[in-house]
Amino acid sequence: MNRARFGDLEVLCRTPSGPAHETPLLFIHGAYTGAWCWDEFFLNHFAEQGYAAYAVSLSGHGKSRGRVYLDTFSIADYVNDVAEVVARLPVPPVLIGHSMGGMVIQKYLEEHTAPGVVLMSSVPPQGLLGSAFGLAFAKPHLLGDLNSIMGGGQPQMDTLRDAMFYETIEPARLQRYYHLCQPESHRAIWDMSLFALPSLSRMTLPPMLVLGAEHDVLIPPDQVKMTARTYGVPAKILPGLGHGMMMESDWRIAAEPVIDWLKSQDL
Image (cartoon, rainbow, N blue to C red; front, side, top):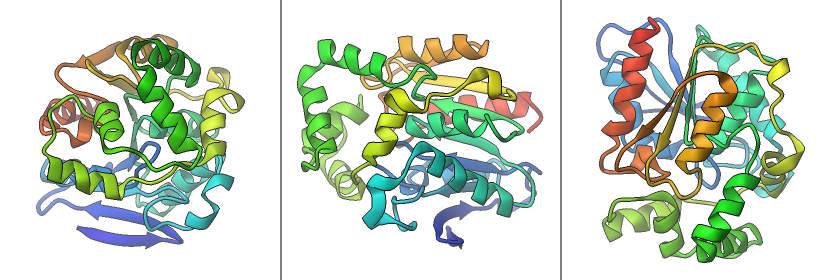
């Protein structure tokens, strides 16, 4: 793995050992995490498939700039981070975003183009409120715990497991993820809830793949299908996975449809 600095942004990179596809991939993480979540399994796997695979830690995340100013960052700031990395790559990449990262991509498309995008358990263009209401009825304790984290409280290990994973994850791995997770910008959360939702009329839509997870309690399948309907594409709901699909032991269930789609688009 190469860990690079794109200006003040942390970017993880894995490159193919043999011939590479012309179009690279840029992975964009969700809330409370960083580029590390893609490096568990995805970056190396996609490099083995011939793709130069990059993952950025957005401002205030991982080893990128602004950790002490986290709450000042908006979704627009995260969009600017993505644009900054894209400008430094040799050709425009396919953008692959998880959860909040999917919302960042949708906002990015208001002002920029991309050869293709993949939205994985993405915050829908209608925002987070629908998911929050659903969670309030289905898992009220989990919504309360997430609200406590937003208020500066320390996340509980059980909350992380229930929110992110369907599998019975081994304690040592859960503990490692727990220590890698971090707070999220309140401003960005409000942007995704109400104040900075995507405008379809401003977008130039590229080829798009929309993926969800069968057992996702944060962005459940009905929210994923709503995203897909908005953009006029089918939704693919992946069996046996939770919200953190790229970190589950069965991560290949999430990776293979992306590779198949990239090939179908000649990317």
